[in-house]
Length: 303
Image (cartoon, rainbow, N blue to C red; front, side):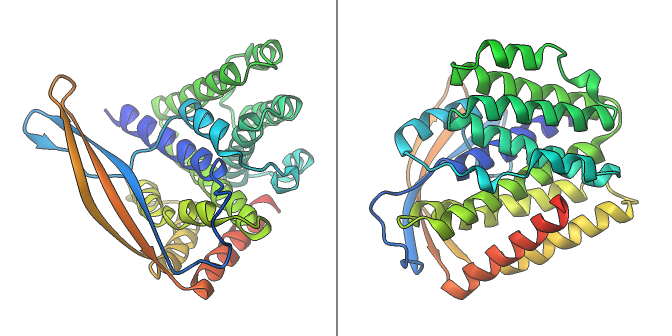
């Protein structure tokens, strides 16, 4: 059960990164940071008579790739963590966090069909995985499969998703969930970081800002995950949790009000889909503080 739960959280964080990296509104003004309204989709899975905790669910990386195809998001390789930085990471915390960062970069490059870059970032991800002692989780043919499918984005995204699944499952099964959590945290911070840079450099950026401030919700889930089963957390985990809590305090300035518009019940699959209208209100200076904190956290990780 714990394995399945962590797997779901893994895909949630990965999907958050790819959703963040694939949204850019071609018409909204950059200065509009007051109230942003939109419709979201929430899925609630009903098992017997118990309703699970309501959380924002996001599309898989492959589904997000289809969203990106229509979104026209920009790509900037300068936002990625440089491959040569990998040699700097000499402890498990930095290796795990940066493995998550490189995986997010890999997803970003793949979504934008940067095929050769994708292969390089799969290579550096394998390098860190090897140093973490989790190479058994990664198919030895993974890079060859990427090279063979270099012109097929959907296949590349499928291979990446499979790699995430296998790595997380291996870590959980071998009682190394703390490593898995750090990988997730690194992936989350990189997704938000790249989005913040896109928000700063894009003229038409309201949709990116929209996606970014919504991470107030996912951040709370991330902190809960980092604290779960940590009766005696390591100093490394404690410092990581502290950093994310400080970021959460800044996100508290963002006010999100959601109103249910419509609900559709699928009795066969026991899934209720809610159409929700969300209003987000925040000040420009509060948004800038969030970006500054994210940049600082990311800089401390990548070195």
